[in-house]
Length: 218
Length: 217
Image (cartoon, rainbow over all chains, first blue to last red; front, side, top):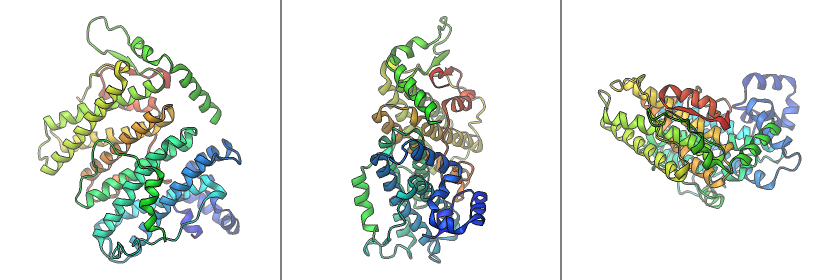
């Protein structure tokens, strides 16, 4: 991941100031950047001041799990937007908006995790060839987009209770959760479906989510 | 900051023990004029669930009206989507009422005089307001919930509200970024999260019954 990727979604003014201040410092401790924007500041305070060096393993696990999913989504939208002719012109703005959010989520979670953050894992968006035309056929791309978004919604929902000890982290997770649901809603609508399955969205366990995501991890 | 929040959490936890009794006891005397002149949501998890119940009552009443008196030019697709949303809100309302049992606040009297139900713009703009407000309300209330089962239940509802919000926003502003626009999702990719006091102030004009949340304000 480049610094620029990581910086996406953080207050441009702060980013500019920091970049001008010391590029090398950024490269060496890019994760600290997150702590300088408003929500990352809250997150960093919540995770570092509340727990000190000893963020509970349960909380670290949730954040790493969430970051993994956000990395997949972030890469998926970057790849889709880079694939010429894949996304119809009328929807490019929508996918740009979704991609912008996923990049911001990566930055935010990386900031909260500090040195424990993971970089983007190697990905295979065709899932071993199962979706060979993932980046050439918009229908396939839409199907995968819906899969990732609905999966994200179910994943955050399933982890909420594990963050109950930290008000700030829980709130931020919920604020991401509903954005993923907005994404899922629009992607379904573009695909000619209803934006929902029913009155209640069901959670998924971490194991269920990882099993679904694993084919996309190279 | 953390210290204050922890203190408040403890206070809520501490005062939650007698919550069921307090909810009933907090209703102001109504002098036999009208039911539900005023209602306090109560404390602890019961208070949070009543808060959600109040908002779901509002939404269910609104969409019921929308379907009973469709705006001019409502398409088949719009009727289908708005009927789904009506059904969801009724399910949410009934689910919370059942969960609260004896602790539930009474039926609220709503006031939709500001809405022109004959106008698509008026109806969908109001719907957008309610859905975005609902999302921010649940997001802001999550930290007030003590029981993980209730937190999960709220989570199962809030993402459906977010789906509604996105769909309504797209009906108003088709194929644009409005579904998750910069007016509602901030630069960190975060949706709204509002304290109960702010949500109740925003919902107030649509609710005749005076709803207070003394424990959360």
